[in-house]
Amino acid sequence: MDMPTEMQHQAMGYDRAATMFSPEGHLLQVEYAEKTVRLGSASIGLTCKDGVVIVADKRVRDKLIAPESASKIFEVDEHMMAISSGILSDARILMDHAQVLAQQNRVTYGTPIEPVLVIRMIADKKQIFTQYGGARPFAVAVMLAGVNKRKTHLYTTDVAGNYSAYKANAIGENDEKIKEVLRSEYKEDVTIDEGIKFCFKIFKSVLGKNFDSNRFEVGFIKHGEEKLHRIDGEELKKYVK
Image (cartoon, rainbow, N blue to C red; front, side, top):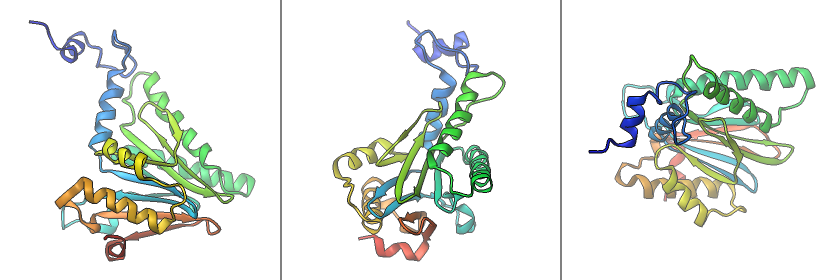
C-alpha cells in the first residue's frame, strides 16, 4: 500500500525545518503555519470612498475575560491600523517593530510614514524566517490599513513574506467564503458606514446562529481626519440589520 504524500514527507524529514524544500518544491513548515492562520478568527478590510475600515471577529467566548483586553486591532500610528490572524503573540512582535518604524519616520522626517513601507518591513521580517534555520516562521497573516495624503491603503502579507495591495480582503477562518462574496458584491464607492453594514451582512451569513455583534470590533480611518476610531459593544448594534 502506497504511503500518503504527507506521511512520506514526515518520514523523510522534509517538514523538520522551514528551510528544507520537499521534492515537490514546498516549504512544509511554511504551509503548516498557513494552516494555523486559517484557524484564526476572521477579519475583513475594505477601502471606501471616505476612508478605510476593518471589521474583526474577536471570538472571545469566555465571559471572565474583560472585553477591552481582547482588542485585535493594533494602532500602528494614528493614521494606520493593523489586524492579524494566527498566533496573536507572533503578531504582537511584528506590531512592535511596525510602531517603532512609524515613530522613527515621524522623528526623522516630521511626516506620517507611508503604509507601504510598514507592510514591506513586516513582509521582510517574515521572509527572513523562511530562509534561515534555527527559528520557525511567523504563523500570522497581517492586514494593514491606513489613510495618507487623502489616499486609502489596504495591504495583506502572508506567512511566507509576500504582500499585495487590495481594495477589499479577508484573512482568517472562512476567508475564501468571505472573499467570494467580496468579489461579487463589493463596490468601490461604498462609504465607511455602508462598509461596516456590508461586513456584518457577510459575517451573519458565514456564522449563522453563532453571529453576535458583541464579538466584533471595528476600526476606521477617514479622509481629512487621518485618525483611528474604534467601535465595539453596544455601539455596533445599529450596523446590524
